[in-house]
Amino acid sequence: ATAFVVEFDPREGASRDLDTGDVDFLPTETLIVSWAGFVTALGRPPVMDYQVGIGSMPGLDDVQAFASVGLSTEFETDADVTPFAHGETYYATVKAVTTAGASSVVRSDG
Image (cartoon, rainbow, N blue to C red; front, side, top):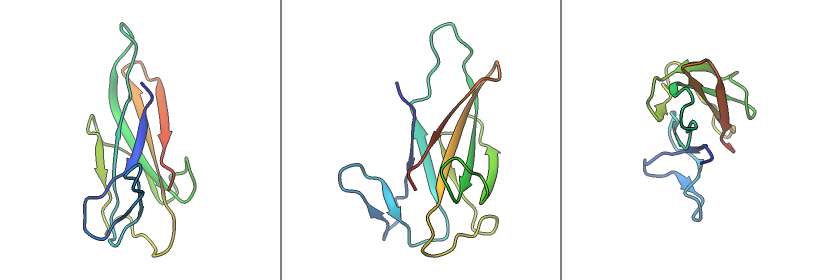
């Protein structure tokens, strides 16, 4: 399976792509990111940690540095820690790290 990241926000006022459900506008000061699809082959080291970063460009963590979220598959930013500017586009990057230290990365489309 291919891993993917989705900017997900169930709050009222979020603007979504009707085909994919992808959120492209949020009326709030926080962002909820969820992901799925990280798998390892049978007999290979399992995923032990996810790390999430928020950036001004895909793959960057210049807005919020990568933070470990354990095995949770959802992360919500804290408006007191990561203030977002109105009208700006932000990108989420999720790293899956295995018990052997190998990692795989997926990025949102902003």
